[in-house]
Amino acid sequence: MGLNKNGIFGIASLILTILGIALVLLGVLKYQDYAIGFSVVGSGFIAIGWAFNALKGRV
Image (tube, rainbow, N blue to C red):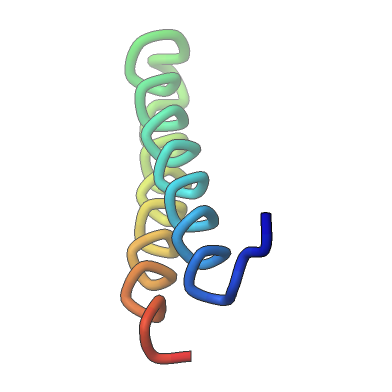
C-alpha cells in the first residue's frame, strides 16, 4: 500500500481531528475541573488537523 503525500496528510488530519475531539469530550465529560485546558488543547489539535487537510493538495 503505497501512500503519497496527499494520503499521509489525509490520515494525519483525521487522526489529529479525532484526538482533538476526544480531548474536548474528555475535558467536558470526565474532568470538569480542567475542562478549559482540555478544550483549548483539543481545539488546537482540531486546528492543526484542519491545516493539514487544507495542505493536502498543495504540497
